[in-house]
Length: 482
Ligand code: ADP
Image (cartoon, rainbow, N blue to C red):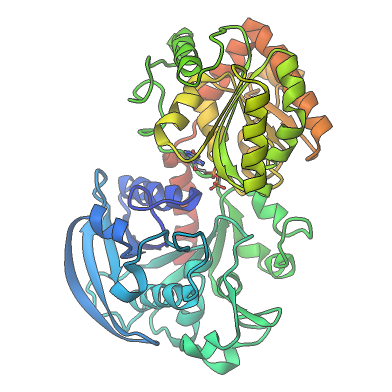
């Protein structure tokens, strides 16, 4: 089976969020199951620098607005997955991020940049492709390649089947209607039964409408996005497509996230040596200028600071928790008001609260290993990875019952504790009172060492691997090809 994963980011080439982890790890896990999975990604400077053995293989002509582009082929560092890099210096070789300039503003020509990416994915997946290698399935991801199924619908001959992966429905790629013709789509495609979406042309809607199958990153999120509360306006359409919509929980990269071999830790540990986790707590407290206190419950956050993540709820109850004896460590960046609020919190409680504004791979690993309880009070969470890292590192998470959090964390209620299913703490509604009550429940259990050990062990035993997720993806691919 040949699968082309068309994506705007893939770890370790370039990453801004969970999409990168999925693209990189899914390709790798599929290849381990004898699937010929390959990645197509734009040639940003970071991608050109990191992809191994890059060589030009083909010029593709007739791409709307830009004429021709060059396809390079290489391999992923460490993993060996073949990568097609879409090289167009003007569109992709820019300083800044994949979607935004250095000032954090969206690139004005994003519809063109990702329209071209969608076109190239479509060409490679149709009878028009000059390449020898042709995919059976093109697996698109989020709005950036959402146009591919529409392009194949209008122009594809002997086309591959299409899958659309939705990692976050909040980002839809909606642009002025002029882009329909600028991007080479027929004018009549601009209608409700097409790419039109509330007076704009929408990349994501195009994908949702035309893809043969739609996959979101958790079963609960697949149900939630069909409701008014979580559907971001697309709930009606998603309901009509419910038959081909499925949720598959992401895995985690167990080579990167495994406390037994993690090179960032002062002491490695596993399920039989959970006691060694303590050395990481002490090292973390020392590194972050927190009081070295083995008994204080150390609550942790590693996150984008965005409204979605619900961290304003933590800000509201943090002082209470500190007065009750907890320590808090936060690593993240984003919303300036939240950054300011957490910096103030640190100033008010030096030695008890540590706040690092920024992005740090090493510190995020040390926090997972060195803290006791991981906090994730998200308002919505398509899948979420950090709660799974927490489970793998014996750091039980406190999460809101939504999306992938609901699917990956089992509440430590009496029934679940007795059956050995409990792995963390779950609360229902995004308000301060429920969050605080849930954290207090976690801290109470933390003090009962025997139950805590059980909870840690249950989480560390859970199969969070990509091998499990890849098997489910394979089921979907097979059903499309039957
Ligand atoms: P999202 O994709 O919505 O940001 P996820 O939990 O799915 O949330 O994935 C977030 C990823 O980014 C994880 O791998 C997480 O560890 C990482 N991450 C987020 N913020 C930071 C940070 N400040 N420093 C290091 N890693 C971070």
